Amino acid sequence: MADIFRYPTPSPVTRAGAKLGRDISLARRRRRFTQRSLAERAGVGVNTVRRLEKGDLKVSLENLSRVLHVLGEIERLELLLDTAADEIGLLLMNEQVPKRVRLRKTSGAL
Image 1 (cartoon, rainbow, N blue to C red):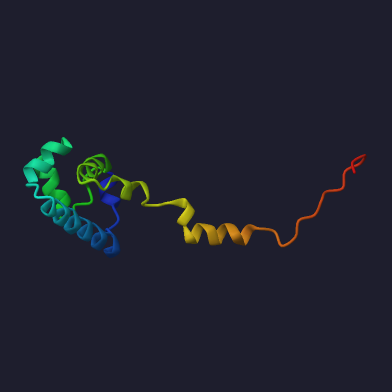
Image 2: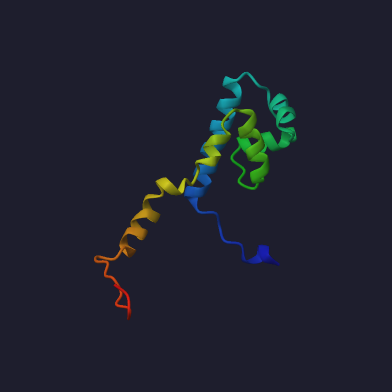
């Protein structure tokens, strides 16, 4: 029933998936791995590797992670949304910083 109300995939998402697929394919070939050998090393099926390389966004994050690990690129996933470099989040936080900080008056305190 949830598929009836499914929203279309935004084109930037589709383009990003296609680029990721091309990049995985190129990284695999640079390392001289066949699709089968990459699949075996990652513990996934050959069809999963094929789907990843085609930019299929329905491949699980676990399977993507396994492939990236075998390619020696797992740290890229770790840094995908690095909060220390989240420019929008930091700008929004900075908008919340008060212009002045005042001490609260409390009875009996300094």
